[in-house]
Image (cartoon, rainbow, N blue to C red; front, top):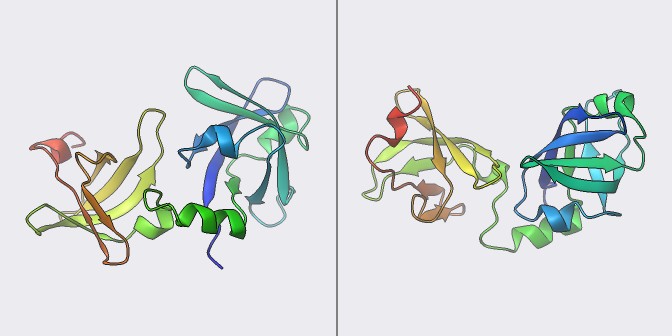
Length: 178
């Protein structure tokens, strides 16, 4: 059995009818967040968040995913979901892991980041899911962090089993965040 895969993190409430914003961690939001889909949750103990949430509605507003759940009828309930992780169950997680182009953040964090010549640039500090593209957070050897668009042109190789990520960053990319 593998660890559950995070589909999204619940953000702030939107409106009065229980909608919440989501920070997506999937490249298949239409499939994973379809009306009627049941998602497991991970929340702080004692938070009152149900173990599962059923998608009541989804929509995209100004590039932000808004989702309402059957179990959450109003804004007050939606506020209580803030920070909750929506995760795939073990069977779904296994199916996602079989796709060689899908990576869980937990698989990537801590992997060494190398340039195409093999020189160590730093390590993966995280994965940010974006509306247009995902970004790798890279902690450089000097302690700075930078974001690298997670596209094949800039990240030509991800070898989880071999323990490395190759980043072909253009000159000055890591200087943008100083």
